[in-house]
Length: 178
Image: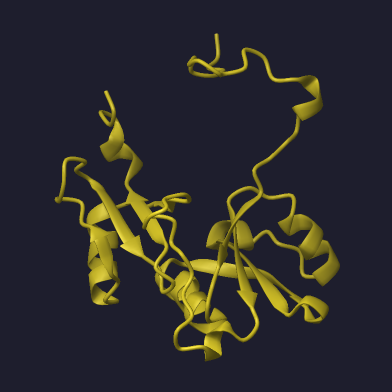
């Protein structure tokens, strides 16, 4: 028998046929300065920019990023790449509302201060120790280092807009929550 789902109160025993093929495509973060955010996510986190879409009539731009391996399969044609981008899973959308980069006082709520809401995104890494060294070398801000707190082998860093990013090495998490 293959794994289907863990059972908890509220879990639907069998998904409706109408939901077959649904894929979680992307999560969106609003960013103050796209140049700063794009530098962090492409240089430090290793993502690739798949597509930028501008909406001048509403004064915002969208930047769709993916891990490098996924990006290497993207079509060259912009229209085809746009459609391909919206068919993927694990995409990060950065939304820039024009003008925020020029406002020294402007800041987005990270979801972790009161009132809490959004918490974090997560990156799995092949080697947590190497990733921590990379983050240290790049002066990344930590919320929690892997050796701190009750939950060991899990780090939390901040992106330039203050959003939390959980960093995990999957092989170290076999006993997590048990």
